[in-house]
Length: 203
Ligand code: ADP
Image (cartoon, rainbow, N blue to C red; front, side):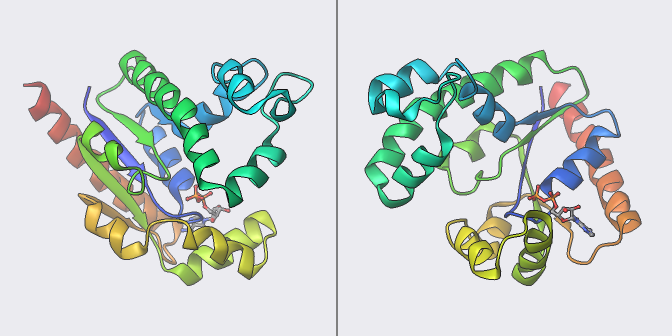
């Protein structure tokens, strides 16, 4: 299966763009959803998380105690790495399983941190970045999540820069002040290009 990795900073419009591809019948694999599922009540990662971090990190319903874990990994890099050593291989395996099961001309995997987490780029055929200015990200996330400007900036500071993302991308969707019809037109053109590439790759 031909795999397109869709990425972009917070608020860039990844979900919006992914849904426009889905409207063309392209199957989506969402790594955020998978990450959430494996840490849901009795999810695939939970036994290992309990063994590594202790029962205090497991909520009463068997899911990850997200607030507590967020607090720990925010200030402790080695804890973050231990958590990722559990979750990343599971996310990878589940992503590959969903890709294999997907029905369509090609599949889009939505990976917010594709550029940041080294191995992803080798696991997709094309990297598609959704691009907008930092100011646009800030205003969208402030209104979507009710965050302060400082909160959004702190999240952006932990992500790859706009330049690094553009440098890693094979293809770019410009979603800075793009009206919906302009965004749709870009997705249409990109979709047609991916249909051709997927056909060539399968030939
Ligand atoms: P991401 O998944 O990258 O965090 P979203 O697709 O959720 O980003 O978009 C962030 C917010 O900005 C959402 O509320 C979305 O509706 C809005 N948005 C995205 N693209 C546009 C656009 N071109 N014009 C206006 N609002 C947009």
